[in-house]
Image 1 (cartoon, rainbow, N blue to C red):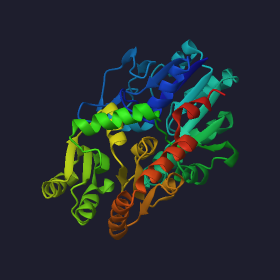
Image 2 (image 1 turned 90 degrees about the vertical axis):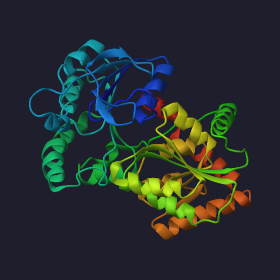
Image 3 (image 1 turned 45 degrees about the horizontal axis):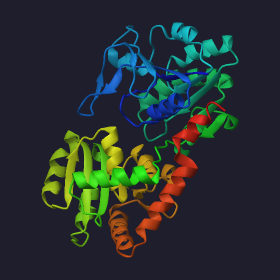
Image 4 (image 1 turned 120 degrees about the vertical axis):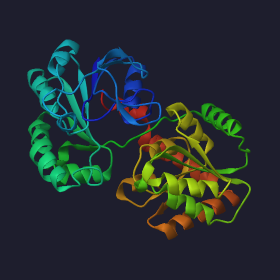
Length: 384
């Protein structure tokens, strides 16, 4: 079986653990012939969005990757919104895929894939959607011109030829059904997932990361990660943590990149408390080891795929109280909605640790991961 992953509505980044990477890895592991068609967007060594040269190569996820430039029909800022690329139909004809996974519901090239599907009706075509009202159609121009007049008509034209629209969250389902007017029968819940380690690998990762950073075995570790802007609410989390009683067996690890909007404020907070350690940008492998080393993952602000990875790595969680998080918090953490409830969540986590209840919450995270977030099972849904 040949599987084509089209990452033309978004980026595809080698060496990361995003949904695109993990599904590709699982399809390669299952023995399928896999090709990734991708834009030139990627991250540089500092975790910043950048652009690489077009071309083909064998990617870190085990599949062949062909990176295509945007069509040169206008300014780059416009073309990266239109998302049109040269040679897509030619590549489809050359590959002759049995399954096409089109990542992201908003792109001109969905019409190209639709054209191929019409001529090859046996091909299974899936479109996944990450869009919701938090990250899309937020300004007047974006909502009424880019989405309503450009992306949505393309999507609606293709929907009858799509097997399923795979929505990563309940809020995405709301966006796709209400704003893009997708029929309910075409929608399927397909959350961002993660890698689930066996017991031996989990323990090895936990031990390795704790030894690397000199963290004693019986220390409670909070972890927050990401490309930190004001929406991630890192400063709020640090202040809430600092208001907790000072205990020697509690640490707060922060890894990622500080954007200019928060850098000065966060650096002051970091300097005030030696229990807080800023580890900088981490590779995907290093982040997974740190998640295994942590006990509680903290995400008080905007959404991130690292939440699901943290649950797969058996972390209890402190997360923002939004609809998309609700399926993942079932007796394995705390949901917060303001500064007061964030402080209460930290206090409750410390108490659960002291009363030896936290380990059971971490086991519950593993149970949730196996039920909802296992990428091996999710990859199989595309080929079954």
